[in-house]
Image (cartoon, rainbow over all chains, first blue to last red; front, side):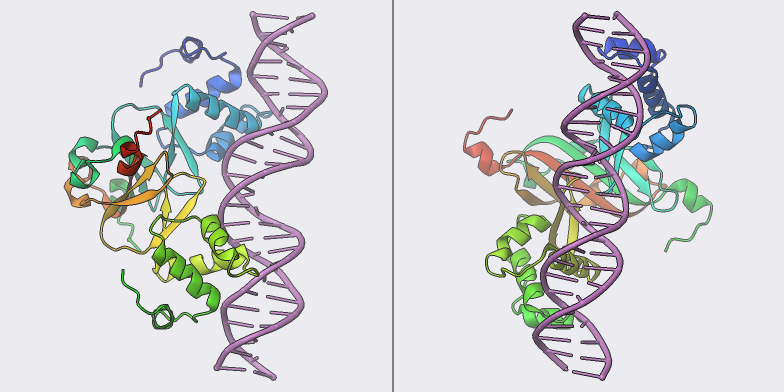
Length: 142
Length: 142
DNA sequence: TTCTCTGCAAACGCTTTGCACGGAT
DNA sequence: ATCCGTGCAAAGCGTTTGCAGAGAA
């Protein structure tokens, strides 16, 4: 997604562009690693010393409601966020570097016989393993 | 999976077949709806009034470690359990009846170009929607 | 003034941990 | 007597809620 002006973009979505909201959105735009609430909080607390986690939660819940971001559930314990992406795609989480990558993947190809009587509203695919960057580094798989 | 004698099966896995452990395993064998810890606890508390949730957690963690059961993460908040199934398959959760179904699905078909440099260790697919039983009942999709 | 965003503190739900009792070997 | 499974109570962790004060319109 291309958001040139965070201020105008938020206003267009009917959201008051407070400093905190703009910084959270900017962080998600600039970091494609699908950060958790804690990662966003830790990254912003330096420049916004008064920031509270509640505000990060409030903001992300608001953004999710407005379909600005989407929730990615990979491990049960951690809720990760990414810019909303209407294009079908999967996620890959690297065991080593913990980064979550987007993978282009056409879900329609996997629609099969066993699903034909089900009405599918949403579909989620994720992979766990070693990413190209980590396997190139020769880090041994355990 | 076919487990005729829970007692012998647990012993074969190197697990002492206590009454609680046998009942938890039997519940999972008899219920293919991928129950949560609470569902298992609620189902067993009637016949085992002294049962504690800690024991259910202990037992399921032990079973997971021994690859007797596996964890299914669909919504972030709820950890569901099923008998370990080495055969590749996906899950479908019905929005209406909340039941989680197994779907036969060959993951190899979705291995694609964008994944070719990734070393995939695990793969998870799940769908959300309306199951055949609920859509037959004419329950309207919202 | 009025509205609403922020952020502290407390509550909440799920899961794990510490520990003592009791049953099995 | 030793080992280990159980279950209570408390702690831990991520997230939500209640609420008062600050700031914007």
